Length: 299
Image (cartoon, rainbow, N blue to C red):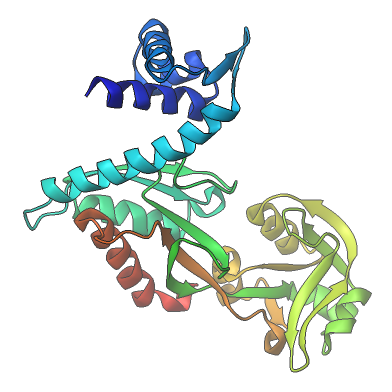
């Protein structure tokens, strides 16, 4: 047990980038963490970390040990959770990663509804837009909005995710309604700077995926800001349907080029491949899938 404790301390220090940060994250003192790591190095007979005044860096041996230790700890924690869950009620901690951009919309509502429906599951939800390493950062499940990519992780599609091009009725009257994707280059555009392809919008055509350069009227880094600019009539935008559903229903914005919308984009629950899925994780994924199916017209 002492070796496992020292292993966890070492992994926490590496994951958090230093002893102070690890102490804040775990609630253990820097002195105890330092003692654990030092005793682990003595036990192994190798240096695992190179220390500076502000941070730590892995040695070659430390990197190897960290990768194997994290995998071992994840496996051990999973085993312990499965044993604890021999009953029929989902319970225990569940660490979830989800995009911050949609935390205030449908995604946030569904996660909070799960928390209410399963009070014995202690959710730890981290809303961030960055890509996370699920294994090393100890996440049980991540909600991702993207096209499905090859991965060693398991991905379950919860719902399709529609991305629309739209503008105000006044703007359409001024510039005309684009009928072909090339027409989008002739109108002012509100650009989301988070997009992978800068200054261009992608469309799916009968000939395949195509990108069209746009006239950048304004650039912002969040869908809600894109929506605000579009509603103010500053330009056309390519934006998730979730962000503008109410505006489209109210007629404040009008969709265009609908036949060329991107296909294959979805909301996915992604989790590590495990022989036995924990009861709480299965409940979470199933609940989200059911809720999104009920609200498919909102995505």
